[in-house]
Length: 271
Image 1 (tube, rainbow, N blue to C red):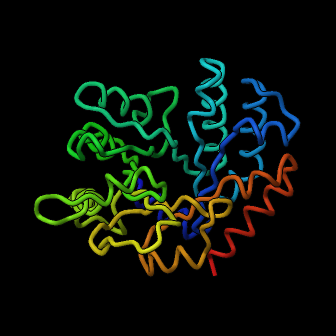
Image 2 (cartoon, one colour):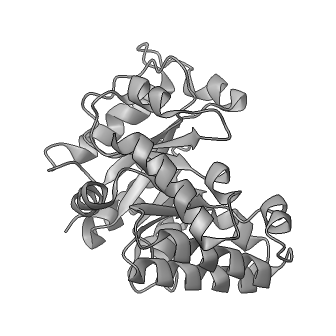
């Protein structure tokens, strides 16, 4: 099955929610864990225990593991294995983007099923050109995995680039949308190449009608995004994944309270 098919099934079965696993220092402190690879591993495995059995998608933020070197990556590998074994789809937030053989190596690292860190999908960034991401798109097709292309974010630094216009008048963000849509054309129920569009972007200013791919909507909860914002921005689009991190994670370290916090958000988006 393609990633699009598997994601659609997961959303139908478990509801449309993506929970981030972001073990930054503040949360480690709040949970009484050391700021170390061991602390990060305990944090991640607690999240897996709490969420992986009933949440559609888990989204580890790679940077919080990478800062501890090989021991941190080993912790990430273990969390990914255990979460996938429990039935969750894993979207690794790595935001890789490069050209040629370097982009191909990034794609192999995360999307080749023989890799130690193989996941279901990754985030990638298109600002060296959407075409430069082709090695990742090739593996999406070859291995039935997924990729989410950063498109429109709510941080003020991104707006200068994302809202800039091409010579023909399209915004750069719309250019990304249109080029991704070409890869998803004709896929059912939708394609495997998605977009990252923040839940706090305000007036969207994008035509998403032809994208035919999943839409990751970060920024729910602590960053101010609400269920009403997601509905207003994305309407009836299929494959929308509201993503929440800190507002759920601060309920830890109790597995029960973490699970309850995730269910609270899942129910908001399932109603």
